[in-house]
Length: 289
Image (cartoon, rainbow, N blue to C red):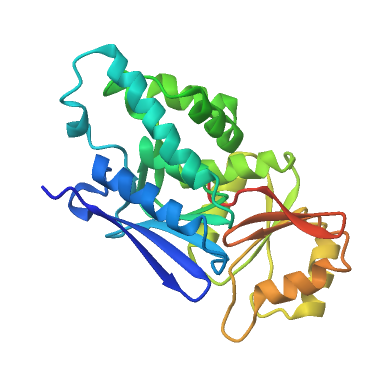
């Protein structure tokens, strides 16, 4: 089977890192990790790039972990520790990139794949996506302390413990629910959904139901004044939205509205959740992980 490749491409100010080994659900080989490190080193000095997108080839998996075949040559415990040290170098290189990073997760994000997604600033996931670290029933190894910290920051301590101890995979809707909780939303709070009938609808519906939030449907045809009225009328504390619908630029209208609508305390985009702080948008949580 092929060792796979990691491709770095550019389209204007957007860079894309593609993990290309679809026949193995993009399970990472040493060569692919080195390819990721090389891509990060190249991007770290490229001032023209405004955002880097990471995704897996084939549409069935983001990254299904590190290929277990890579561990067949391990013969002593020290090699496990050396592996985690090596992984941390790769992950730190990604985490340290100067531009925002976005993981587009389709299908499985397991083990090393989850670690890579957790290092990104933002994540989006399609319905059916699963996040997990099943080492309790596979290799029986441990993660680095840094990786535990990344998971706790992303999905909370309770979900991290359950994932690790029971080898459970977390569905996309649970990951989104964890993002809502990280924003300080509580049972009974209202979350607006401003989107045509797309995957945002399905994932958000399940996520809000998980934690007792009230989902409010906002007409996809609304313009700026109608959106402002709707958000104020129902007191939405967060908004999940597609980027656009037909000729309507949803994100542009939200950015315009956010300059004077203090009632809209958090804005959930298709690529993440942002909140107002001191008049400037700052990343406060993640919609999709």
